[in-house]
Structures are given as C-alpha cells and as structure tokens.
Amino acid sequence: MENTYLPCGKYHQTYKDEHSWWKTKFIKSKMILLLIVLFFVIPNVAQGYWMSIFNHVGYTILGALGVQLLIGYCGQLTLGHGAFIAIGSYTTTMLLLEFPWPQIIVDLGLSYPLSTIIAGIVAGLWSVLFGLPSARIKGFYLILTTMAAQFITVDFLITQYISQIGGRGQAFSIPGESIKIGPWVIDSNTKVYYLMLVLVILIIIMLSNLLRSRVGRAWIAIRDNDISAEVMGINVLKYKLLAFFVAGFIAGITGSFWISNLSAVSPEHFEWFLSLWLVGVILIGGTGSIHGVIFGSIFMVVTMELLRMGIQPLGETFPKLASDFLYIRDSFFGLLICVFLLYEPNGMAYRWWQIKSYFNLWPFSY
Image 1 (cartoon, rainbow, N blue to C red):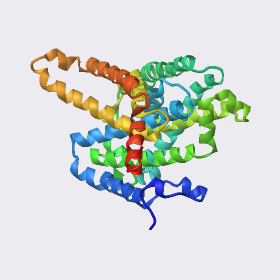
Image 2 (image 1 turned 90 degrees about the vertical axis):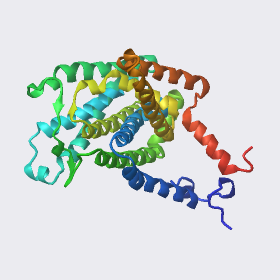
Image 3 (image 1 turned 135 degrees about the horizontal axis):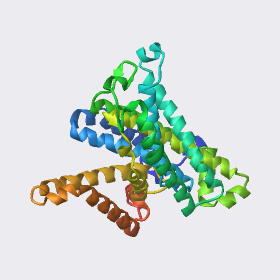
Image 4 (image 1 turned 90 degrees about the horizontal axis):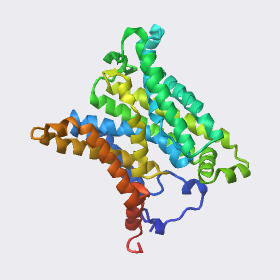
C-alpha cells in the first residue's frame, strides 16, 4: 500500500517529483483545506476590525518577502526597505491622480493594475540605484547605504517635493472609486483582503520558483561565500543587483497594494521604523525561509495588537500609558528581538520544521 503522508515511507525517482510543490496526497489535502479556509471561511467569519488585522498581516508579509530575499537568500543587509514601499505607493497614487490615462483604460478599470506594475518597476530600479554600492562594500557599510535610501527617498524627495505636487500639502486623498480592477471596485476591508490574498499567493509562487532556479542558487552561493561564488564563475555584481531589483519590485507592489487600505497617503506611513520592523519580522520568523516571513508577520502583528488591547483598558486609570503606546510598542519590539536572538536564534520557521518532522517521522522521531 502506497504511503501518502510519511516522508520516511516514500521516495522519489525523478527530479520533478523531488522538487514538486505538493509531494504527497496528504500535503495536497492540507493545502486545499488551507485555501478553503483563506478564501471562504475567514471572509465570512472575520469582519470589520479583525479583517483589518488580516490585511495588516498580509501587508507585512508582502513587505517582508523583499527583505527576506535580500538578507535571507542573498546576504545583502538592508535597513531602508520602507523607502521602496513608499516609492510604490506614491508612484501608483501619482499615476491614478495626475496621469492622463486614455478613457478606454479608465472605463475598463485597468489604470490601477497598470499603475501597480509600473510602481513595481520604478521601485525596483530605485532599489538597484542604492544596491550599486554592494559591488564594493558589504556588511555594516551596506546597512548605512540602505539607510540613506530611507532618508533620501522619504524624508527628502517625498516629503519636500512629491507631497507638494498639486498644492495638497503632505497627504494625497485617494478617491475610493479609483482603486478598481476591471469592474471590481475595492472599497471595503473584505475586498482589500481578497486582493491581498491573491498578491501574497502570486508573489510567494514567483519568489519560490525563482529561488529554485539558477538565479536562486546563485543568490544562495553569494550569501554563503561571495568570493567562492565568483571563483565558480558567478557574476556576483549582476546577481546582487538583480536581487535588489526583485526585492524593490516586490516592495513597489506592496506599496501599491497598501493604498487600497488607506483613504489618504502621506510620508508618515513610511517612517524608518517600518524598515526596522520588516527586518525584525524575518529575524523572529527565521531568515532564509518563506515560512519564516509568514510566521513572523502573523506573530508580530497579532502580538502588537494584543499589547494594544491589553494597554487600552489601563488608559483610563493610567492615561500616560495610552499616550505613550508607541514608545511602549517600540520597546516591546526590541525586547522580542533580544528574546528570540537569545532563545530561538533560528526563528519560528526552524521550530515549525522540528515539530513537523517529529510528527511526520513518528514513532521513529528520534
């Protein structure tokens, strides 16, 4: 009888089978069940406030995927990824509000999808610009270069110039009817959730397949030892810049998606803490793992929300606690990073792998 759920009882004879997405019928059943829960159960159960939490989790996943690519798979340290998300948001916003789209494009509801793709390309190219120093520097010096992207992009270009276009001041109001794909107007949390779900699945599939290709293997070789990779004939600069482009493209898509959840976009949505937050997500979730991005995003968003819900009732007795929540949140964030680096340095994805292996190999889990 063929074993469909125990890895120790099933082996593969072809490369295609070994690298398939869903290796057994049991795994296929689990994934189909997961898709049913995501697309049908959650939208009918979670409404309003909780749906906004799911959307925030999805936004964090999308943003952290680019950081995971750079840090976890290519070994390029970054602390300015929020700048590329901001580029995506503002590119899409400017195209929707200022660009004279042909009327047929507007009528067909293609202006937002096209703006999203253009935003990804622009953010990718902007990311490559700040990835150029990686040809000569790495480590601590590259961190400073990517931090410069944050300050140059958000604090200077966007705040002082782009935000002033049209005399709007700091914020761009986004008409609800402008965010639509074909006839589908995205004007509720549930519709934003479906958009987020589709984007997360598509980008995870794209990134996973890319990492299994020659490009992905080159990135991992550069991460492990860039000198050895160059000796083996890998064009290190080319693949580093490609990693920055892909990470920036994902960030641009992330920023374009996030305006569908906002009534107005301003530089305050893309402060430097966002970049630090995304790095913390992959450290807690696990570097070098797409599962780590998902686990880290869920854990961080839910934990911070529980912290807010715990402090809110105390606000009546201790008003200063409520007014200082942002400082408490930042302090708690730092504490979580320290605790995970001390007690779970490989992140939640590694623990998940251990638990999964234990049950898959039981009763021979030793």
